[in-house]
Image (cartoon, rainbow, N blue to C red; front, side, top):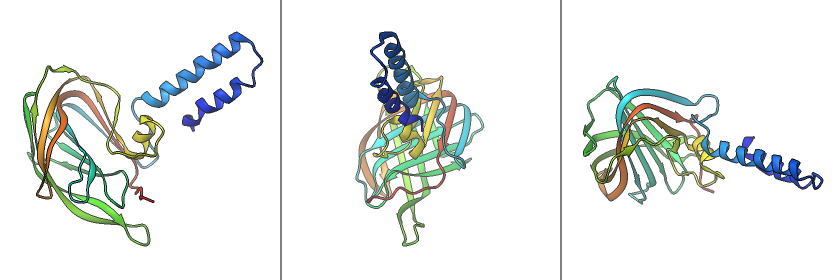
Length: 231
């Protein structure tokens, strides 16, 4: 309901008599509400959401516009923590599904980094919901992805805030995208820009943009298993 608060406050603004101090206070509260809706940390998700907290590790991410086969708007996030577990999040859309995630945690040594210079994700297979049947149940297919990152530019301090894990075009802002799609929140560490190459189901996705980084704390938040279907 918070996302409607700024509109409600602006409506009240015009009902207040022309008293400058009251209107100034209301404008300040409205701006604060808007900023909170963009930058709430960590993301607040619905009951039943998956939330995983990792400490002291390495990560890499990529955005692949596509299409690659039936997949487009592909978000790839890979993180390996000090516990040696590797989390892989694959966000995507298909002609029938808008903004869905596949998620895998493994202890296999599938992700290697060379500082912030390069990173490699060995082939991993996830189950991806690509459509729904007449009852609204997911139709899953296996998806195999592999990727390599090559760092460039000057490393910078790790960014904070919530990065949505898929591209859901309906939300009004990034905060709502985090609720519909889930999000990755990073605290501390260092980031470096990277070019990304690889394959999805054996088909090259060309060169994509991404980054390589380290983190002190990484919070992965994914919503309950829901499917957003294209109209």
